[in-house]
Length: 204
Image (cartoon, rainbow, N blue to C red; front, top):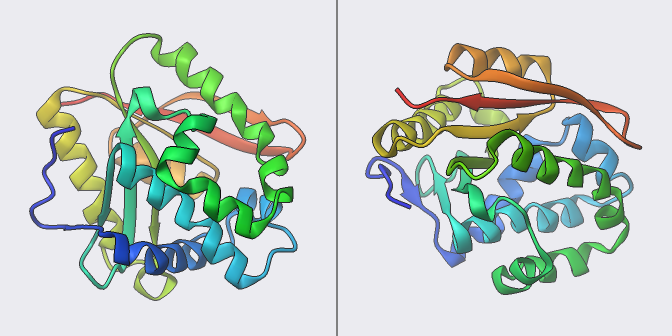
């Protein structure tokens, strides 16, 4: 994937642990992760959130606002949006999962509906899939999230590829609407009983 990341920081292997810490703090009040990681210690949560970092480093882009990693974004070519068992092994994600235990992995099963929905919405069309965007609580509201999102939007506009993502809060829906994303579908996750919005932004 080509990239317009000159003003941002491309994560290195040595940054994975810190990025996991930042994401764990950024998503500590997220409704979905609150249920999936219920009962997990802070250390386990930080290890768990190393998984999307490793996966995006392997198959797409893993970018931070600076080497201090105030915020992180990971995105992928749409063809790699589904985290298959083989890809988990190759990216090293399975190691992080084993350290946390299998209960969170079982609780993630309802999220498999996203894989089917992405295929239904996008069919064979190439796209950019935003796996995760998070900013450390002490840096939220200072423009770091916007910087990351604008970078992904620039990537989309330059390559002509649409951006697909899922989000779990009304507040995020409003932010993405402002940036040109449209709601494709609103669903209720089975078993977790939580709403999710599936969204798409066409390139300019």
